[in-house]
Length: 101
Image: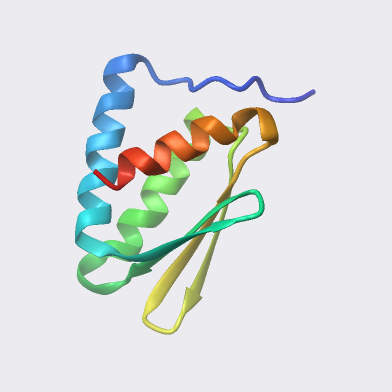
């Protein structure tokens, strides 16, 4: 059975998550690039950012199980590949646009 394309967080929870993610990205995001099915983000791993990224991804996967996240180390950076099925790409793009604020 396919997961429905709907976030399990209520609007207040979504706002808190966006604010938390935006703060993390302002502090640790090095760069981002679009991929065929989503986006790749490169984070600095200094100052505890790696643990924060991993925790945020874990919680995001719980509320939006239709997203796919892959984390990998690349030297002093953590790569996050985020993907979504075609019907959820707009949600994924919106999530990461909010993360840039």
